[in-house]
Length: 104
Image (tube, rainbow, N blue to C red; front, top):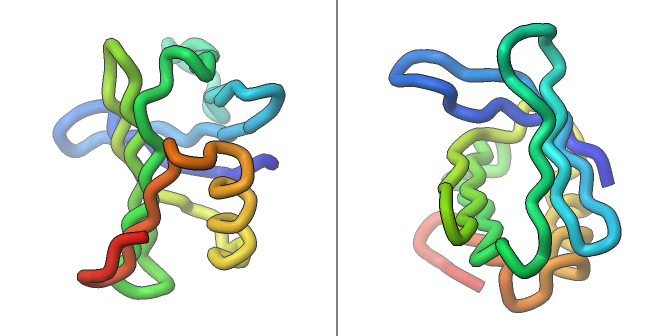
């Protein structure tokens, strides 16, 4: 699965990335040429992958690892339902989806 996301890179700064899931890994590849490097998060390092949606338009994400937490948003207009199904299948109990006040 490939998603275009924006990760927080500073207080008022975001960086565009392509998030790819494969072989129990998360690969974050910067879309802009700059100082940011490609990052690979291994399954053993991942604590949780969370999607928070207050409405089905604004979608935030949090990727918590043993050493770092990434905050950002999904910037594409892909089908959120399909994204959630794919992430739940890929990450199982490490995936958390929260919509409004309901958490599953």
